[in-house]
Image: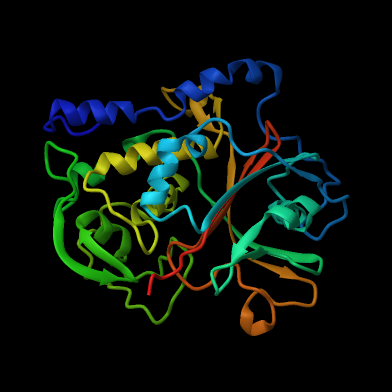
Length: 346
C-alpha cells in the first residue's frame, strides 16, 4: 500500500497494483485441481548438465492470444518506448519433465532443438535478425538464475515514500524532473532513471544487468539512492521487468507518470510468469510457479561465444538493456523466451 499521506487517487492506483496473481490463480484453479502442484520428483538417476538422458523436445506455440503481449495498447507502449523493433517473445512446449537441478541441460536442449534453431533469433551488429545458432551443436548455454518470488506491487513502495530526493511527487504519480544528463548512453531527465542507472554506492561489484563493464565508473559513494532498495530487491525478475520498460530503447519516448510504468510492469509480469495457490506463502496464498533464467550467451561445438573467439555474440553491443530471459512453467511445460537487443541511435 502506498503511504497514507498520498492522495486518494494514488492510493487507488496502488491498490489496483496489489496482488499481481490473484485473478490469474483463480482463472487457473480448475487446472490446479487436475495437475499435481510442484516440480517433478527428482529421480536418483537423473542426468546432470553433462547429459545422459535423451534431449528434451520442443514445439513452437502460436503467438499469444491473450495477456499483455497480445494487447494492442501494451504493444503500442512498447513501440513508444522503442522496445518493439529489437525485441521478440516466443513460447515453446516441451515434452520431458523439467528438473530445477539441471537447468543447463534444459536450456541447451531448447537452443539446440529444431524449433529453437528455427525461431530463436538475435540482432547482429548491422541490426539484422539472424539465427542464434546457425550451425554446430550447442555445447553450452551461459545462464544465471533470476530470483522470481515477488507477487505484489508493494515491491516498489520505497520508490514512493523513502526516496531522497523524491522520485515521485508527493500526492501524485508525477515523476520528479532533474537536470538532463547522459548516463550509460541514456538521457536522464527524471529521478526514476537516475535511480535505475546509478550504482548502489556501496563499493561492491553489483551488476544487475550483467554488463560487467570495468571501464565504467561505479559511482561508489555518489549515488543518491544507495540504500533505497537492496541488491536482492533489485535482482528480482519483477524489478528487472520494470527497469527494462522504464529505460526503453535508444529512441524511447519517456513517460511523465510513474503509474504508466507500474501498470505496464504488472501486466507484462503476469503474462510472463505463472502463479499457483500456496497457503504457506503468505496472507494472499499465491506464489510464483515459474523459474526464470537470464541467458548471457551460447557456445556451439568448435566455436566461442563472442566475436573475438570466432563465435557469435548474443547482442550487437553492451548495454543494460540487452536481455534474454527464459521463463519455465513446469505445470504447463511451457518455456517462454523474451529477448531484446539495445542498438544506439547514433
